[in-house]
Image (tube, rainbow, N blue to C red; front, side):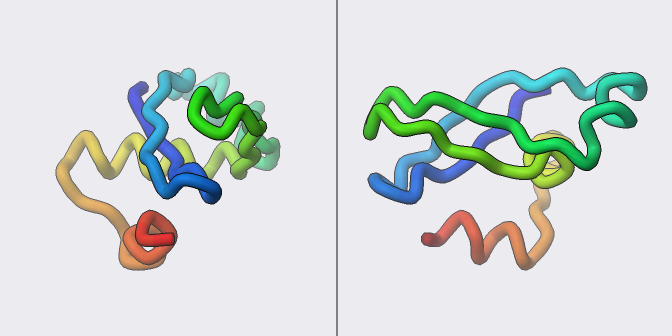
Length: 73
């Protein structure tokens, strides 16, 4: 599934794919995902459940209020 995070250094949105099947979601739910940022060259780490929910809700054209606030930073 396509999802994204916001680079805390540049404020740019980084889109990437993450597995969203039932088996992966169950296994990864409590884990963190690391994404190498091509803009700041850092590694950004976010909870899998957060990027999963972001990707899922983006597919339906909506985002929870707390994630909208996170995207502003």
